[in-house]
Image (tube, rainbow, N blue to C red; front, top):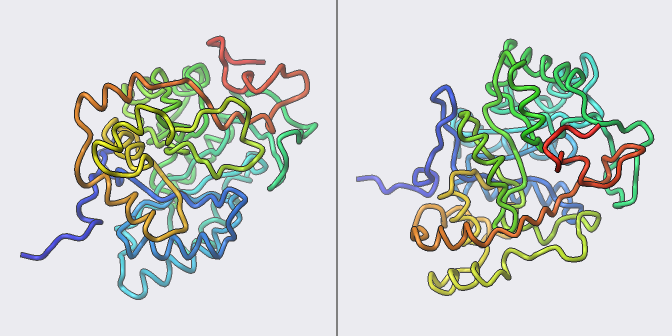
Length: 337
């Protein structure tokens, strides 16, 4: 009997139409700390290690290097294209009429693919910030969320599906009030919603809202992203891997606290997308969801550990007149104008 590799052991999650997506993926955002070539080498190693889901984005500035890795891996027979699940995203400066198609076309060209498996609207408004900006940067053209503007962008995403350029479309960094406003207007529903999810910030209401509607949550910053950009660090932010609950469970399983975060995420039902450039780490991240699961009691302990501590506050997207980063997230239950 042929021995299964890690790629065959990774659980699969079902999307709304019965299609499948791996229960863990590899992020490709270098967090302003790693070069495109370093990220590409990590992806090259990740494919060999057994990763099949890769979370890309136009604004990460490395899709051309990643495309070379994907192309070579397919040509060398390491993986088949249909075994890969590649996501990418339209950046905030490409929401205008016709721009989404241009963004997708560039990503396809850079990634050297005929189609993308899942195409996200990266943020729900066209508020642009330059790469590597600091937390105090503001764009004078930024504006609040508009249902009409967002649906104009979403209609273009739906057209990409009709054209066969993408298999699924999704949203990212949404809130329940925004979803309540746009979901009834969608001709093609989102297959997934990408959101910040980690033990310190579990977003139970948004998570349950998505799951109850057949929308797959994908969690970024699954371990709290200690290497996130400096603009996204604030005094008082918690450290997931230092939480007493996480440390205690890690000691019981004799594993690193980071792996507890990933096991919890996969067992809870979200898809974590950790990123590492170090081979032992990214291999361990993948393997951990295939063995030694957390107990029901440990999962309950993790649930109670939620600190409601958002790390990626998004303040660089604020518009003139906004009171603070909280306005991006509709904290009072209505869309902030």
